[in-house]
Length: 274
Image 1 (cartoon, rainbow, N blue to C red):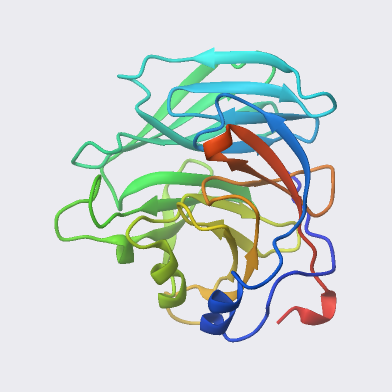
Image 2: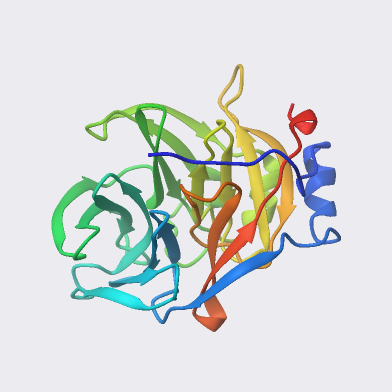
């Protein structure tokens, strides 16, 4: 799966806390395309030709060129209480799902055919580090976000600080894990991390639950806490995201309150990279 991030920016590669404070003052990355999609409640995925609007128990497939919905899937809410995000790998739409807000937290991976949106199979992860909210394929591995919350849907004894990034092998077995830095956790609270997508050049981008911000991260050279590189102001409110594999620098996200899929132009200057 190909991911792109062009060279130019709206990202602020300064001290992480200063970056977080500055994001709201910065001009939001411009939205270049909007597609109305009634399923745009949890997130979006893209294969470059179509975008997939994700809701808890339904998915809509929309053609980017004209915004027409060409396929739709609806599941039973009891079986699909909370699909949060998806990513396209070859001919399959791979989705992160959980039983949120039920307890104890359980997670599953739901897999669909991208052409027809037919549900192909389910991989149960059972109970684990939290609720699976995001999943991406990068560098020969799966990467998963397990969310934790302060209130609704949170496990007793765990709060948003327990949100974890996990590296998995191709059979979804855990290999390594990292926590998020304090600068991001303060932006997530009282919710958690809702979106994740790796860029082609190897930067991890994540979003929270409701702030109009995109966070750039990298794996640390030592220790178990991710490095926060900077914060980008965007026009959409958190939730699940996906880089467009055909248009460099195009990030898909959702305008949840408007039921809209939005493409933003994210730029990055090479000389600003750490």
